[in-house]
Length: 192
Image (cartoon, rainbow, N blue to C red; front, top):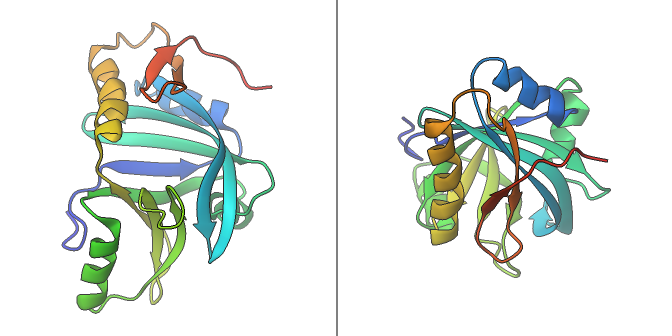
């Protein structure tokens, strides 16, 4: 467990082919995967306004969430940077729950740790939902800070509960429908 952030709750892999990455995990008994096609997510990347597009898949292995992401669109992002440096993909971030991203960043500063905030998501102008940070002195796997919320309790609860009940065969790939603001499982749709 990190003394700065607490326990890791998610391993985030950025990959060039999300379908192959999910098959990799499914072959190891991890699933089912819930897939979200995310378009126009508002954020800040290295100080610049962005709208990110991606296809992301989420599953659980015990208490550890596995996320696989394939970036889409033209907007720059930490995901595209990662694939440029690591064309085969790999572990891009470890995620932690926090009560307040800004307070956590202040706590890190007070602990004498130098981190750069590379990307933030959420509603403008504060972008308080997610922050991707990396150590200045020792860069590598990024840290994703995720602000706790009722939405995420429902979102991650759906995925975790499904994993604990999954038989290892039925509907290994499922889509996430969040059109009404509440995550729901719907039939899988292969990407174009």
